[in-house]
Image (tube, rainbow, N blue to C red; front, side):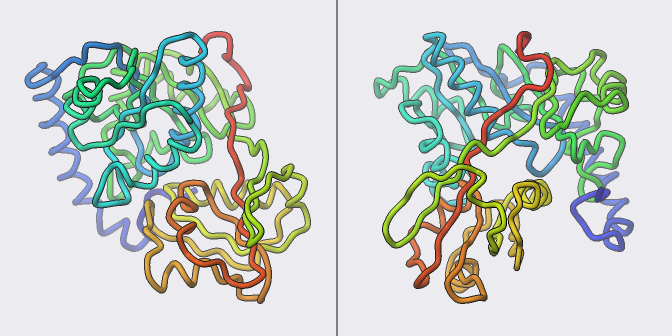
Length: 325
């Protein structure tokens, strides 16, 4: 498990930077903790966030939570900052949410309070808001704070950015109303103890991200295939996400034979030659395996002759705690 986002040599040199970063976080947190500038929306707000950088699986969890709220008649909207584009509404996460949560307003903007209020003023039917990546966005009052911990890369005993994965000290988990573990293979007593040390309570639930189906796009158009369709197929993997190692592991678990792995930074735009190279399998006609977050940026490009794109569709599987979630 990597100790942080930087290579080991650079990570050691960056330790003093993590001290400076930590001091800045503590000052900002103390100011926000006093309630100065905190604004409230006229509807309930549920925040889904994390204390570490990189992907903890927020998008599938937010989509799951939104479906539960919609089924309960709560009329949810998703509010997010909007990364991956100069226009927040056209960022990769916003575009992906519009596909995975049809009929749910997806409201993107740096000032999420103003963005939601503007949508309500325009007539958007918003009964509650699910705040994507909102744990550090404390200027907006929330009624429930959910923090996700990735079992494959918890990072709680590590250093602050950039030497480690922590966005703020692990003690910040005390602010969370509940903690949910993602990408788990079962209940881990050691990880539970670590979370309990910082959060004060055990995780509410243990979940895994599983592929429910595969969308396959070819020159003939899109089609849906079962996950078993991937087994034994050779593919080039393309990913610009926070935790690409989890995708690589899932691909191998599904039986995909990876010829090449093209890993970009989180929210990689795949513009220009980088996008063309990402879609080239290197073996002539073949298969490119990528994520929904990446595909919303790659799909405007012309497919090379004979190349198919495989986009696994994720679902949340509860291993423990579903009744409480």
